Image (cartoon, rainbow, N blue to C red):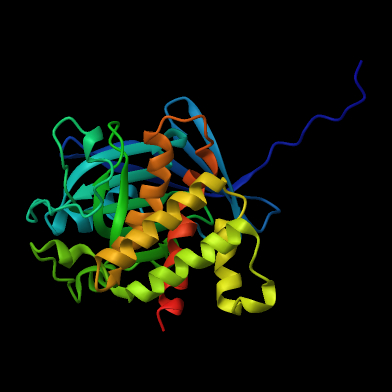
Length: 312
């Protein structure tokens, strides 16, 4: 016979049920519902997401959980005429990832050229799109990333090439009018000229030549720390602990840039960083690509900072 006392049944003081809906095949459909309860003797509201027979616990909040439904997050895109390109729902439907394409803009020439041979139909071009993510969970938020994107994988994976707007909100501060103003209030002009998608000018050929020298000396360990300006030291960390073959390829990329352009833009840096990675891939040598691939985003940002500073 067990001496353990029976567990006392919790008494529900208040309960609120709200549907979670999403756009599917042009229609608003219900995925499940969030149930929020306050129990006797507690000063928090506890939340669960119910979808069919599955229940996902969302944790407690000290105030009412004010979440924005997936469909309401998607509504501004529909109002602006964007078309849903892809949608991924995870955690039973709690987490939303969508790609929206603007049908009114024609694909632009893609200034990154090193991977064109990988595509059977040649240049896929750049397209204006919006990546929208949301999570119906306390502490999570909503993000809209508007930009020019390019296809980087046959499974549909895309990468932002030039940002046109990035808005983050949480569920409590959601404001669709402010969202529209921040993303479309001062439209970025997108022209047909390839130069229009190169981004801001950030450097000069002499800066690219100095950048190549810094990387070369860094690889050869011949640069005393006291000779390197502080802003160079801060931005070189992204290029540490990557294979020497990558440093060599990147030096060659920036040397070529120094000899081929009168001015350098953000897209030129992205081209150099990713092109240097691609050299290792295309040569089919037994070399590790994991490090430079995983650090490519931070390397692009650091290279932009370095090139700008070295061009002064």
